[in-house]
Image (tube, rainbow, N blue to C red):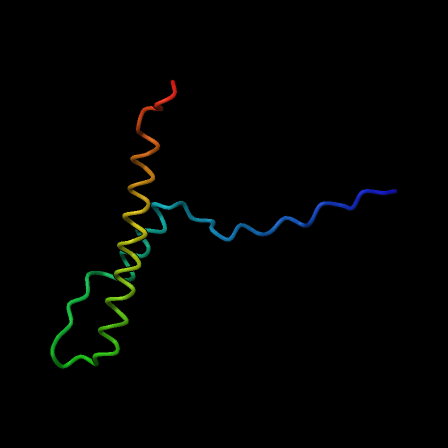
Length: 74
């Protein structure tokens, strides 16, 4: 009985490093400054994108702190 070949490798979906990704997001979505004449739907969308960016940035910084923390079990 022959073994099945392994599944094909998926392409690298995230070719950028996290730092490059966050810098790209920061460049594309700077701090929104809505004006009273802006379309409220666009303002909401901009704020939602910024919230996602800040959440990702916070998650990244938290993971970096964990990597830098000493191992408790050493």
